[in-house]
Image 1 (cartoon, one colour):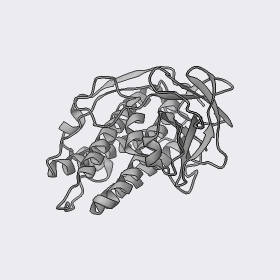
Image 2 (spheres, one colour):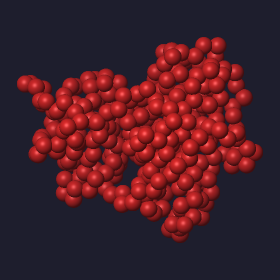
Image 3 (cartoon, helix red, strand yellow):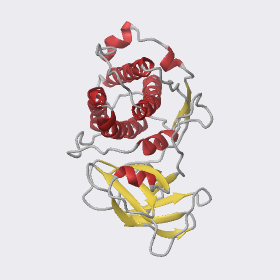
Image 4 (cartoon, helix red, strand yellow):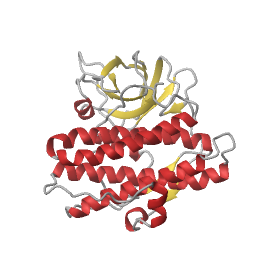
Length: 326
């Protein structure tokens, strides 16, 4: 696990959705706006889903665009010679994704979600790639969740979501590989709800900086650390026991008879699994990490045991947090 030490503030205003795609961006990205027809109908659920997708893509573009400038200063000597070139392509592809979602929302006269101001806690090229993996994992999980939801309401849009999802997965494979980790740690990626995706993204948003608020509830924050070294993290090298911390003033942490506090874990396509949260002091407790998880997992505090990620999201008392299990 690692601790982010410094905070870098990034302010973009409305740049990402205001600027049209230029030939340099499309050339770097490998293509521009898709030349496809749009469905005649666009459900309210799809509108909300793609507005959140735009919120997430704005954050990703800001991170990679700013990181591209920073890693030039930090240096890439211990990385492959084409590292900067790859990150430049990632940033350009995120910009194309933004323009594609903007174009879709405009087609149906749906409100656009402008960028916020962001802070990314990185101070080195290594920390940049560590956080790139986390941010991209959230985007992948959110895209899986979006595809699941629109499969019912807007099936003609699944192809577009799937095409973005596979590219995001390629990005993440590169980030893992360049960090010396296996690029394909599990046979399935982990999908999450829009509620979890939004709250995870909020941890990088400057409070009060969003011109338009996404109408998604805000959950109480949860942090997790290794019980041996108490290093705050959202992240890597997970031990068998983790310590969770929350603000007890933010949430109804009342344990009812027969309903102990639990940590709910979501990994790959599996149903959620649960472990007992043992309170150590007010606002803090430990929980065992379930065995046989791989890749990226998401964890929350709850008192219920739903058998799917969407119901678990609704039963979340605090969280989620992201952990790289392997």
